[in-house]
Length: 121
Image (cartoon, rainbow, N blue to C red; front, top):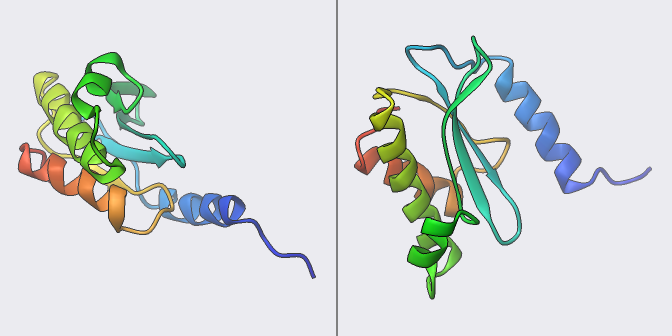
């Protein structure tokens, strides 16, 4: 019996969650992806297949803010930046898609930061 890799298991969990979580024009989906060193988030309207707003730890403006901070603090910066960008496009409420990751650490920090910045979910 072979062991299922952690990434394959995460993709299965994500597919299971995505069966019930869809973004609409009124309430788009806030999708999170985290790698070992970086984290990315998008606000997606699944009805039209359009990304409304996105932020990630590799973008130039966030890299300057994130200098000298740990990964959780960078996730907080990205959550606040994404909320600001989404609200600029008229999005006030989203559905949270944690991407198959546990709601802890960087994913939780990003979500709570987005909530503090004004997104409702």
